[in-house]
Amino acid sequence: MKRLPKLLLSLLVVRCLCSAAFAFADDLKSIQLPPPQTEIGKPLMQVLKQRQSSRSFASKPLPPQELSNLLWAADGINRPDSGKRTAPSAVNWQEVDVYVALPEALYLYEAKTHTLAPVVGKDLREATGKQSFVKDAPLNLVYVVDLARMKDASEDDKRLYSGADVGFIAQNVYLYCASQGLAVVVRGSIDRTVLSQSMKLRPEQRIILAQTVGYPH
Image (cartoon, rainbow, N blue to C red; front, side, top):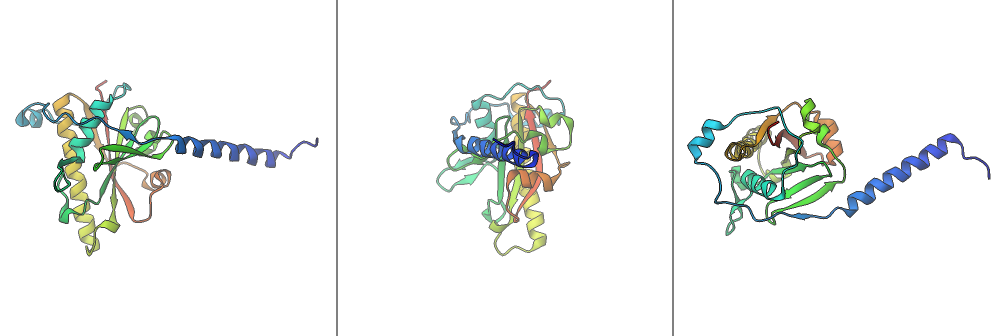
């Protein structure tokens, strides 16, 4: 048999690797989070006193219950009859999506079912920020605004209200972490073009901020 030209052989290898990556992504299943523990936590004034940013994280993963509590606190449904959330949303647009970057994959938090829906079957933690600690921290949240949901809003209002709504969610995460002794920092230093491509976002989806969470180092 004649030897394959090096270029053709390289293309075949790349194709095989890509096929394996897509197969792995297809194999990922949605994760049903346990019910949030809504009776835990410190008094509000103590939490406000202890709220702070940290940039030192242990690599220890967050257990499913901790992740469940954190995401519910961030933007979970606290009024099942109306579907409204723990964070306010202008005009109830609910334009902010919370993406969850874990070591095994990138997920989308689905508040209605309290599940993690797989998006990309690879570790994108390093791509979520320019700081060195993001690649080893157990969890990076990425806040993405879907401008298509902000019906009849001007461009100025889209920027104003989406930014405010992301801020509400990020503060919820800060307060939960202060209550539970977790390290956390919100971040804006992101290569949004590269990360958007890695996350397979649509043009009307915009990355606003990211937030790193983990145990203190």
